[in-house]
Length: 126
Image (cartoon, rainbow, N blue to C red):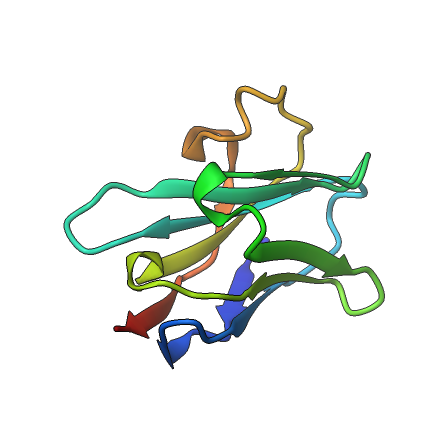
């Protein structure tokens, strides 16, 4: 499965962007998909995950109330709507997918995901 991520760009503080991620195939009926991000000089960190089986969403605290993960089953696309962006949101954003349904504590880890997109850069200017 290949993941194609897009939608990054340059935006001012307080602005919005919507990222998209499209798997190349519908190999898994109920995958779990997630967004991670990696800022310059920092480790990759979890942002949000969506369990397709239960449509349950898990957000890291720093983006709650500002970011929204969603999916369009017909288009087989995962979205990340990012509002009220801050300079600290600047990073390369990666979408990830696992065909499994990880336990909650595990889905925050990048090790839970077998498939990764190429990353899309989000830059928030102050």
